[in-house]
Image: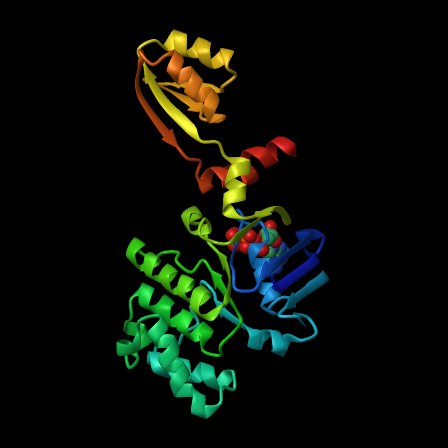
Length: 306
Ligand SMILES: Nc1ncnc2c1ncn2[C@@H]1O[C@H](COP(=O)(O)OP(=O)(O)OP(=O)(O)O)[C@@H](O)[C@H]1O
């Protein structure tokens, strides 16, 4: 597949401080890419440089083959941006905000109406187009921002925490629009989020920490690498279970009233269970979560290595 975003050896320093330290990654066209990291990791610096707002210190950053340093206006035409701080004019209606954006982006006059219809349809705001932005709910404002970010038909949409502060139902709606954009329009979505369950539905995830990319893969592969399924076992004979788990080399932790046991390799766990089936009163297997992945990569594991 074609890489629509290419970042090679990108660094950004503020004085002596390396906020982003020689990172490289690519994003394939038509995919949803999550860029995650703890506070101060270098996410905003990278996004702002990709969006031509900041200047790089070194490296190459291309969007749709255009250089973010030397071809700023071509890059700006290729991207839509929805940042956390709203830049909508609250004293204007939705329609007026969208029209103004069309002027900025030199959308041909005869196409303006069709595009407004298209983007409002996408975010379910056709009926509201004459409403003043100042009178809209937080979720509606976010939808208007997404509509506005799309009105010049960008190839890549940058979404900086698009669902932060929204209620679960509105978050689910925003995700419907994001998935629809990807499926129906082949738009590449580059997003940040601190909701790990949102990161899980993305095609690829990169995790940045301390200015370095510390993981970059599919959610599935990251989960496989960084988490283990756990079995929660309740037994009438703890001593026997502990003996068996040690004998079969399965890690476990004794908790109040149950044991938390590594459920992998599953065949080994099944053997232990079959040897103690008269005593076991309850078993629940829980899959590793993406929260575990993030903690493992940016917390425990990294600290252990550094
Ligand atoms: N203008 C600046 N001058 C000096 N240091 C800066 C400047 N901007 C950012 N930094 C530092 O660079 C590092 C990366 O910042 P950045 O804003 O990219 O992180 P982030 O991952 O977006 O964090 P957050 O999730 O908190 O927004 C941080 O340590 C930050 O303090």
